[in-house]
Length: 543
Image (cartoon, rainbow, N blue to C red; front, side, top):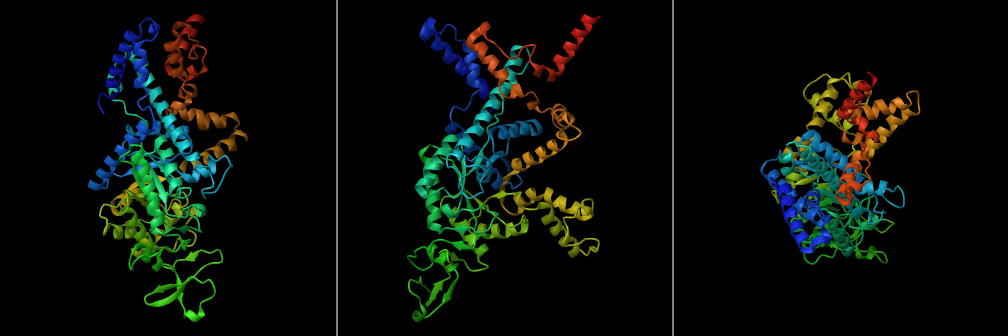
């Protein structure tokens, strides 16, 4: 928005000047220009301000995608505010804009990395409060990124640089976050209360799944148990009521169905009339026809197509769905969710295959034409193996001679430079474009990228640091790369807010301020201009 920061600055400047007149000499030390600058550097005062702003962004992006499927959106999962901050700083640096770039908060990573119980599997065992706490933390770090960047611009302006246009048209690091509420952490009241906390922390989009809360499993694991549609609709309503209560009219609900990989249900819903939702759900339950005389004590029986049937119940009391019904259940779940308040869908799939995803989405769109997906480009998939398999099958169908490849060993490193590998990698590269165009995928995300990058980078660093390279491993693999690639975090004191704090101290204490950014601050070694001047002075002294 043009002139947003400057208008806020001007408005704040006028307000503080008026306050100074009102309170007289007691406000003598308050500088209106400094106060207005601080206001401009903190555009979002509350999490609700963030949720309202980012919900508007998502709604605009959804409308643009409906008009043009090439305008899809993307995100990466972040498990710490600093990780999210560095991601968005990098987005602005490399891509010049945050447009269509979001954040994702993964319940899996909250469980694995943020629980006070220690590392946990993705089974809703972590504290409810950990989720809104992480949302709040992420936005604290993004607001700090704004404050640091704008503070740098104001400093340059004071030094005579013409950066007013950059201030006037400054683009915030604040972007939408799609936040995982798992299966709602309890009944619909519990879901409503947690949703409120998440929205108050800044979430404009909440993703909720149709599993049983106390039996929740990761979408890429076995043992998933889904709930009847009525139960899930109640939770969709709970989230919507939370949005409405807090004034986030454009809040986005992402309904995730795990039916593709789920084979169990905990409840048999009560059908009120033939063909209703409960009846359709019950039709998927596996049952055996019996005579009433064969019924055992305490059996649960259903009447189906005029016949008496006994649902197949496991020793743990759960009921089985009929084999081969998973896709039909996915389609019904998705249509029902969209018809009852959901805005976007999430379908977990066993492999990343655009044709398979499109098959389901096209069936959904036959009923709800603007149905859109949030799709997990999951690290649980072996992308190399999956796409080499797809490429192999396509090449074979095209009549290629495939005798040099072992279909059962396509992950082999020997194929890394092969035509098969090249074709597979090109399919991976175009997966998001293809999925957005052919399979209704509005938003592509990777749930756990920073979990894996942290592990990979730590493996690389420790191999060298504790080996023969010693300190060179860090210098060559980390610090020198930060310098060469212009990663702002190489000056970690500045990134932690040291320069910003120095300016604030000057505002508060004037010439008496004890500041950290003097000549003896070793971070100056990363300032090429300062280093050059320092070397020139040392040469002058020596000569």
